[in-house]
Length: 351
Ligand code: SF4
Picture (cartoon, rainbow, N blue to C red):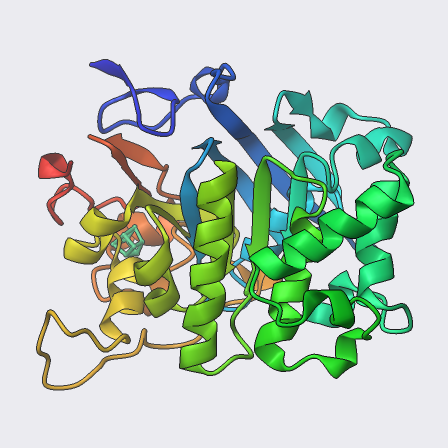
């Protein structure tokens, strides 16, 4: 049966999407469409594939978490959407708010960055210039677009105030290192939002913060997104953050998406053994377990990705087919799972 999935790709139930099935049309409500994205790192005599055939889409207002351990390819994927690393070779299609980003000439990328998509990094010093007052930086982003200085100043102060920066007017002259961790992340969010993008990519925005401050930053982000009808792609390795923020979850392992599901279904019943492993390592108030279990073994670097399912050296369910053949990302109901044994794990009854 051919059906249109939640992510919008026409696929046959329980089968692999063929090449043509990856060609999605951009629906009116889509703010982001990613089709067959691959990211290669050229090396002296070879290429290392960092991201392999990633496809997904996001609706306006949707809050999606891209999760996985360090080295899974989630940050590389996020940065590839904005073509932030010119050394990497990108293939596939990335459409943000109707603009085909990978087809754009370099000089036109500024029409996308900031204005259609904003990016908030974990490290404030990546987003902000440490030797320029934060207010000047916020204003500059608007002034280069033709906004008058007085108006730019007013918008910057209003945005900082909205995001909970205390004494925003006075703090316009402060430098990034003069803010506390939580306030610094609010300034980073302000920088990402100042041009009123349609899509915000937040890369580990709370990792360096303690739990209470992290939750405050997530709440501020959620409120700001709701007011703007903004889509948010949250990159994180923290399933607790996912649970409190995301509507939909994309799980990445070794550069590939291995599971795509709405957050409730995913937490209720993970279908991919890797997702199950990630959740098994997180304390939960709704499930009592004797002890938490970490995913066994370590992730392999992309240059040492094994044949077949990249997760097979760590998977308790691996069989011969897992070691020989890459499992395609198959659709079951509104979910996608890349596991040869998905049916045995209950995928046929997935919603
Ligand atoms: Fe485990 Fe095989 Fe599924 Fe990979 S394909 S997750 S090795 S059962």
